[in-house]
Amino acid sequence: MQPLTDSSLPAFFIAADRASSRAQKTALASNRIRLIAAVVAAIGGVFSLVMWSIDVWALVALVSFIVALSAELFIAIERPERFWYQARAAAESTKTLSWRYAVGADPFFQSMATTEADTLFRARVGQVAKQVSGAVDIPTGDASSPTPEMKLLRASSLENRRARYLADRTEAQRDWYTRKAASNRTWARGWRTFLISAELVAVVLAAGRLFAGWTVDLAGVLAAIIGAGAAWLALKQHVTLRAAYSLTAAEIEKQIPSLLAASEEEWPISVADAEDAISREHTMWLASRGEVNEEIG
Image 1 (cartoon, rainbow, N blue to C red):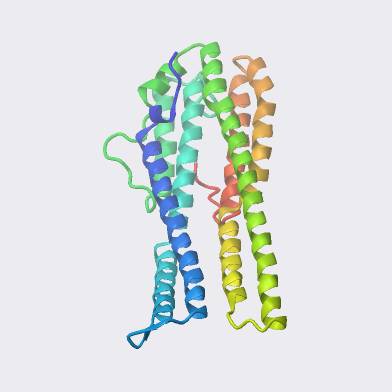
Image 2: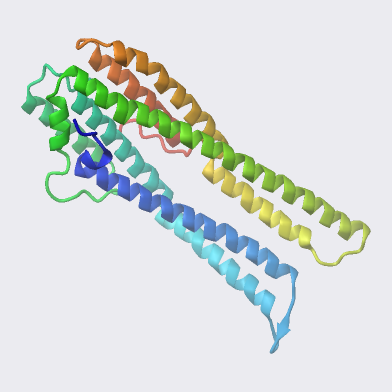
């Protein structure tokens, strides 16, 4: 049986996933522009170069402050981070509903008639779509119904459903969280090394002004760079994500023996437990950003 990939999930999931990616890129780009502009403005405030009666560096500082202010206003008004979080919550909720349906897990038990399960699935996805209508443009047509691939998997034997769920959902998610934990660990170490190095250089520059009579305030520039780096590190949350992803990967790994041993009667609850382990990580991710969407899904 063919793998059940993200492209085999309902159109609403694909729309929410794309909306989340777009909003994430917009949020990160606007924050990046704001922080870089603030650093450039600090540099412009240090130097002076007069050409044709205009201080070029003062002009650079002015333009940079305007850019930083514009980015700040854009973030405050458009709130791309909120759209990012809402769309991601919708995509993850739809994905877990899709897998629960496709493998016959709670609440889409195999004992349910096909029409009953399909109706319940559409209702649950429709509820998710309604809650995030401001962040996700709902596709035209039947965007919340189970796809043919999902129905085919649901109609197969327990062993087929087990094999696909373990390979395409459980193990795939475990491997993803493991890779992301390692990546965030590397980024966290890199940023911490950069910030510590910048702080050491700033100490030297400040000492130079105090004891060697240096007149150029490069320490102020370093302070701006350190502040921008700390703000970016707080936005990306590499340390928090590393811990959360490592824990989730371990929790998913613990679910595999239960999934392998589950009988037809035990299967719906075993899958529900595995999905809950994944959902807990996403709930914590939202909470760490001040967005708790407990009702979604």
